[in-house]
Structures are given as C-alpha cells and as structure tokens.
Length: 217
Image (tube, rainbow, N blue to C red; front, top):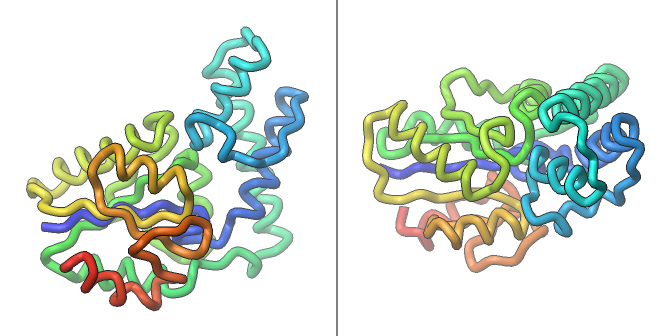
C-alpha cells in the first residue's frame, strides 16, 4: 500500500504570492513587526513555527496561543478579502484535482494532506480551487510546528483511517524544507515545480506518470 502525502501552497494551489503577502501583513498588523517573506530563513517553515520564532527573537511575552489566534484570524481575513475581490485569481497547480481524484480511485494508494499552513487557511485555499478534503486524511501546522512532525502525524492518521500498513510513503512538495523533512523521515520525495531540484521532479501534476516509473509505483 502506498501513502501519498501532499503539501498545498505551490504544490496543489498556486497561492505562494498571496500566502506570502497575507502572512507578512498579518504579522505586521498584529505584532508591529515587518518581515520580508523569506520563510527559508526560519528553522521551522510552517505558519505556527514562523510565528513562534518571531516571538522568541523579539522577546514577546504575551500568551503564545492568543497571538497565534490573532495572527491566524488576520491572515484568514486577508485571504478572504483577496478571494472576494479576485474570485478567479487563485488556481490549482495544473492537474492537481484530477491527480487526487485518480489516486483516490486506486486500491493501492491512500492520499493525505500534510501542510505547513494552518488548517483554516489551508482548507480555504483548497476550497477556492475546488479540491474537496472531506475524505482526505488531513494534518497541518495547527497540529504540529515542524514539517517532520506534520508528515509523521499524517502517516499515523492515515494508518488509523485505513487500517493499512504502508510500504511506501511519498511526499509531493515544492520547497527545500519539504525535501529535508522527507530525508529525515526516510520518505520518498517528488519535487513539484522548479523551487527545489531533485532527481524525481515534475513541473505539475499532468506529468506525474513520469516519476511513477522511477519510483517503481
């Protein structure tokens, strides 16, 4: 049995630009701190991990949970404003929805979302491009702060959901942090897009068959 773990921003949804804009705006509005949106400089490249590191670096003593809720709420508000004003501007990565549908039809494969975004924002973006998560194992930055923890928890939940033992765990993502986390966990990695170089790489999901043979799937 195969487990396919999928990131969202830049992997399933072309949302990196608006995601960066809204998170930096939310941080500035709530905390009064300007960030450049270069998330690769953070140790844990997830929504909750980034906020925690900012709190630590700036010696902010206010309740962590309260600040997280405030930043998340402002972040969601910004995304909703964007979607209301630009209803056709957020797109799926080409072939993403069809790929998920086809994989869900396979008896040898289970799909899980493992995203560094907060669950509320992640589901909002997926809904905006027509991807239904109701029957998909889902793990996010609302559950854990690090990519490795999120991926490992997704695999655990997938086992609970299916009762299956997975022979292969394959993560589809677009960032260097995704690649590093899969190496730590011993999962296979498929790079989506051009953000990170890897020996198994696809420009989008219309070409997924090209890596299946390399992974012997």
